[in-house]
Image (cartoon, rainbow, N blue to C red; front, side, top):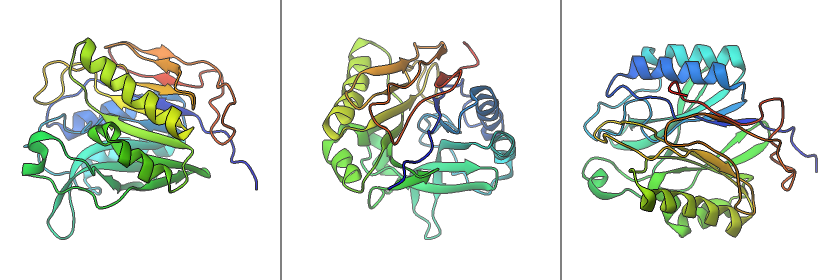
Length: 257
């Protein structure tokens, strides 16, 4: 069986303008261009901020055009978060996959948390997105705190568990954030990729930041601070299906960095 070509991954935690899809799409586009990565992952509800009253975003919304254009120019796939309304009228806390061809909904959060269930319908099953032959299991925030979600996703055969999230400020939230992703990596022997908000997001005045990528043994390959940006290191080759490489193999981008 052939091994897929190495996949370069970036996790981004850009500043968010509440309920301003156009401004947030432009910030996403900048992060895509700066990252030089094939896959760029953004936080939960990154296109609106974490505001459960924000209007649903259609995958064909013209305000996403800057992000689509950036993905086309860079040859990248971006995973962005937004509230999405399905054809049957149900709304989901969703992940959009954006490429140079446009955007599509590829995942709906399965394990809703707190007030989210008052508006949103949970996704029905785990999902895998394939990029350049790499199987990426998708998650949104609280999904990663539920071991059954990672187990069900890993059972589909994945190279990486890719989560978009938001965590509040403070050491307890940071420990929970890192603990969940480390556990997923170690338990299932996969890369764990997390993009989580930094700075204000919707109804949150402060969030944790700390986006990062963990190797299959759970160790952090690279991790951002609460606001800043850091460059990654060469992948250690422990998992041949997903190798981080290049002059800037992993880049955590923030306009504030």
